Length: 199
Image (tube, rainbow, N blue to C red; front, side):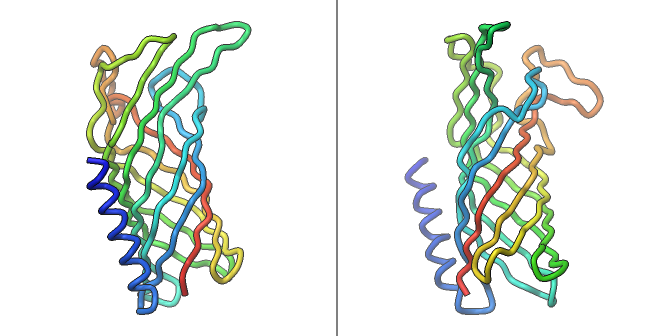
């Protein structure tokens, strides 16, 4: 599985460099995120993670473009002990995620983005007070909605702030209960990344 993912990423990266001289622009992105799981009764975001990948985009009007990304995103949740509560909790969720975002430039320095993403879970780890948990299991995929803001730093470099939230639950609640739109637990991610564009 990991080998197949690495091959796929290598193909994407090769494609980025191949199309960057045509009507498409491509590049790399890297940064960090702050994540939480809604429905775990912990206030967050409380877990830091890696956020990195590659992208290709194309303008179809002077200000509008579409961007596709293939990213490695670490999600999850964490609780560290304190003087009032010695309990601990750690949830690590590693995804390879495909994004398709619409982007709109408003001014010389700013770009808004919005769109869906589909993540494939490649590894999960959950631990509470030193005990490894395996149930309930997480879904193999995570369908999310995303919106964010780009700040142009130079012709090649941009800084991006993006908020992502699962549209569908990534797993049911431990007792299987549901209420209206609350069908289980959902990923929430706030990311901070630098994007480098080949021109």
